Structure formats: C-alpha cells, structure tokens
Image (cartoon, rainbow, N blue to C red; front, side, top):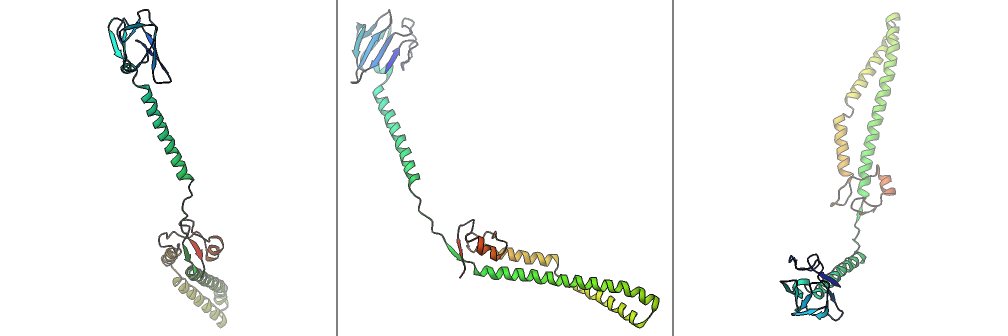
Length: 243
C-alpha cells in the first residue's frame, strides 16, 4: 500500500502549507508492519528531525514538511493495519451472514400437516339444491305447456261458438277459459325471484370448504366435479375425503 503525502496527496490530514509540495513524499507499508518514507520534493523531508531521501519509520515517527508543517505518521495516514483488520472482520461478518442465510434457505422447511375433512355432507347440500331446481323447472314447464294448449283451444273455440252457437262449442270455450285461469294461478304460485335468491344464498352459504378456518366457496359446480377434480381445497390445501 502506498500513500502520497502533500497538498494534493491522499493522506488523512489535509495540508495547506504553501511550502509543502503537491506530492511531497511517499509512504509505503512493508510486510512486517513497518513503513518506508521516500522524499519526492526539492524542499526535502525530515523524519524525526533528520533529512532523508529514503528511510524507515513507524506510526509514531514525526514527519516534517516544508517550513512549518509537522505531524506524526499516524496522524497523516491513520493505522492501515487496523483498518485492514476491521475491513477483514467486516468482510468475514458479511460472508458469515451470507453463509448463514444460504444455510437457512437450504435447510428443508418442516412440512405442514395436511388436514383431512369429510365432504359427504356436501352431497346432500348439492342434491337438495339441484333437485329443487329440477322441480321448479319441471313445474314451470308444465304450466307453460298447459297455458299454451288452452290458449290455442280458446283461440279456435271462441269463433266457433260465436258463429255456430252450439252447446259443444260453448263447452270447449269454457274449458279453454278455465285452463287459462288454472295457468294463471299456477304462475302466481310459482317460485318468486326473491324466493329463488334466498334459496341460492342458502346454497352458497353451505357450499363452502369444510375447514372452519377456511370457509371459501367451493370452485366445483356440482358434487360430482368436487369429488372427481377437487380432491383438496385450493386455498387452505385441506384434503377432501368421502366417508
């Protein structure tokens, strides 16, 4: 390691004395911890009061430059050995931290125990909901067919009764009118939108992961898909079984 001492040198203590050269002397650290000082200026360099061209020194040696500047070597350059030791300790600490972090990441994390939950109760939830949907749809289909049939009957019998005025024409017209009344009553008693919404909400509240700590809505559209494609909850990873 070499340090240039002067007004433009890289020593720790700044020098402003105009009689000191920009690069006045050079300090070299030897392998045994001692230092060698070499004069670079025409104005000369003194070490412990002696003019030198090249001389050994220690940290407590007093260096005189120019007409009035004087300082110990340790004041000019600090203690490079201690700085190197501190830097080495810091690098070792960083290296140890990196090693510890790598070791922590490399160590396998303990596997979390996978919980298992019975989903057989969801079969009844789905069947009740699905069967009700089928019943409502079938009832609506029958009402629509009856209403259409009697509407067609009334459409043909009313003109016949008007023109021919026969008993059977009046009878058919009466049957058509009664059929329309029946269809109207059936539509009135059909499931209302608010009832359908309440039934859907009840199903959504029950169609959830059986893990009480999860409770997310199940992604499967029906129980068959739940058993076939979703053997575990995508959120809490709980395993599903049928018992």
